[in-house]
Image (tube, rainbow, N blue to C red; front, top):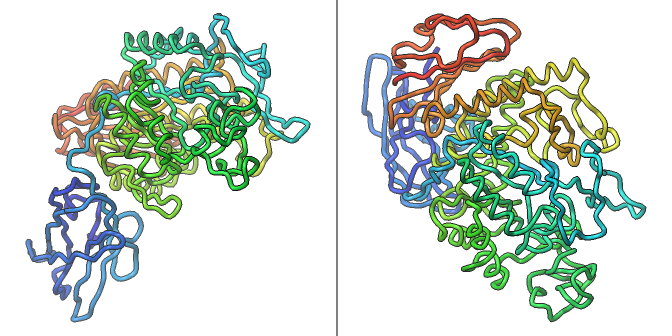
Length: 626
């Protein structure tokens, strides 16, 4: 097989791999057959909207088979860069551009991407190597504590196993006003459960006062919703969780508020003449954009119960991001960071201010953003975003990994999987990649076991989704596929994020059926024990916290990859047999001399130490020196 002219994933062509720090030299190299008449190879590097930089590549290595031309790029500017190569072949001008994910080809292709991030950018160390657990608070666990000041218009289920209400009312409105009563004390009662799972961070969906069960329609940022508990009980939860080695991050919804809120007060809940909707002289009035006061106003995706705010309004920015503002208020009460809802709808100036406010409380405070695409080249509302170059987000929710894992496990095409994983790792700064939020499902998506084994939801409506469950045969198959997906989730770069109930086989199509209550007493113990095992293995090596990624073999039937911790010269090798047939591996033959002192820390029963026999849909993990 002939070697490529250029491969951006391969250190022989570009070193270091992936995104680079500002002022960090990066070596680029092209390789040509010795019989190709090449002249004047040049690296053409530019930032969108700016002039190109031309870097001459010189002949640095010559053998009877290959000529290597190399050059050094020293980045002076932050942000997204693009590049290609130009040269003469037999006296004719030719170009080398990208084909697929990383391979350079002549003339026809796309530009390569290079991300340049701030030279001092780091990630909070405490979250690296850990395990995250996402909780939709109303549906996780209900304590027996009676709460005060519950609004009388809330529908409260008596049966924990009910299907959430999903039909519209007589006016055609889906009110989201049914509650099951999960609360902060319920979460606190399960701290030992989290500890046994290996959880080090709880990510809570919104917990502030709101009059919809999802609580993304904030009514008051200054207090916990009364059905969840009190501000003091939140502080107690953070303090008790810390005793178990667990930190808490909160969901920040700052692009909009609820119409039914102290700030907008459309329905008069907070006084007949209070709030922006009822009082043109309200201090909150400038937060919102009315086109015909008060009846027409900007709202989130046209949903009138969610009026948009002008995040750059000085008073709103101060309220959220100022000293002793909302961000700092809840960090002082015990939170260790924030996940930002719809980060692509938060303007850059606001994110800059938000970062300053959070990091004033300590560099260990983490900021995640909800971004569904590749966050390194994301555009929103005509603006190229700069989330991950320093000064805004620490990392993001990793939807690209989620889709890559699911499609690989379900459809067995290895090329999009490998390319999808490596592209994100190439585009993101390593500090961000080390703490990516790696989930398989969330409150916004179908449950993973349903996605893997159930009928595709397609355009089916809520009536179709509501009481549709996997058949016994589908469920058994779903558990098998789920375990394979979780192996990848736990051992690829980033931090595995378990959506509550995924670890016990909870099913469900889209919202609200993916938000059913945790099935206490009816857990799938097999998946639960499997999850605990993955957590124990993950904590066995620093390679899972900061190791680089290397695919050894990736086919329709198997995935073998290494996590390489160069700092400690240690590695971990993961073997996943995702086929219907057993596989045997000669460790020396497949790993060669690159990996030494190999120790199998997880192997199927009956395996030796030199020959690795893996049953269908099973895995093994080895630690080694590198």
